[in-house]
Length: 424
Image (cartoon, rainbow, N blue to C red; front, side, top):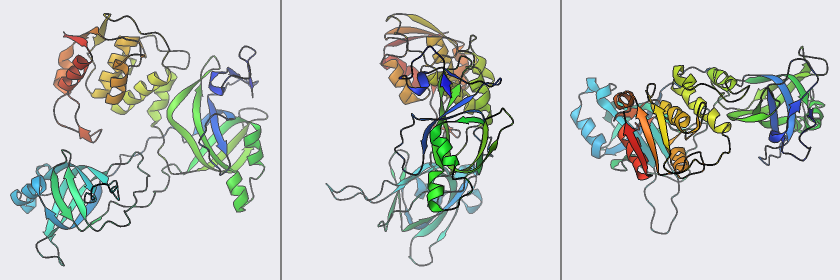
């Protein structure tokens, strides 16, 4: 592995221009660690690779989960729902409860809470029945989702909580229960059991780990542990971050690669983690030869891939000075049919094709405080705003498992940051 003559070797790996002698260039740079003593510093080059199989995979939709609240004394909206609905209405949209948090009773003043709690999203009550051991309490069956960052995550039970408090999304009490089932679980198996690194030119650190392939001792398995961020190598040999792209697991095999003499293919038994969707690779390809040159390339993507588009825009964000306060920007609103579309559209309104100006509400707030291409106060001409008015409405966003972000909320947020929005 080498760098071109221009940048010096003292540059960080992501600042270099990577090259190799084979006719088909590398697409990925792995930066990370090998061995079992993780420091979580992802700045050591491990390998240049032509392909990483298993990094971009479409998984089936996450299945809804089933829970039971045991020995409950219901209150508030939950009690009203149970009193109001006949049995045949349970399990339908009429029995939708929304988001529910399960936590421990509040501790005495000055004592830290024993457990942070868990959140259930998009909850529907499916059944209720009297508890068989505690008079005047009920068992309540629910389905929905445990809120986790990655579907493979473990959800650990609290060790010393004997009563659970139920709260709605507005922090109002839904009552309490003596136990819950279905919420707590061990870490799931990896949805993609193996990752293949194809056409790789490994660095010495990774080569040393490969020397132990075929050995089954605990020490050799520890030496073959790999944890790496994956960066895209672009046409000019520079690299860019791929948000959420990583390889983690144990190297199990290595063999010569068909991509060229001296290159290796490696098989890694993957740790539990969700891959990026296959379409995210198509999104990244728009930046391979430089930033996009046309606006609205993202418009044909679904919500997931619009989110990844905004993430790619963030990863490729140019460090340019903010334009002066008072500048007018034009937002093309024809394709703002969801909140992800708004982030893509305002990114391009402020910073041109493939531009970034937030990809969630917190990030939008940061951008509005300066340093991301525009200085407030500024004027935003929102063309075809009727599209967003029809789609960004009050309700529950089942894609994000939270209350919907409405157009009115966005307008208020922009106004608070001294953005004068001209709706067209």
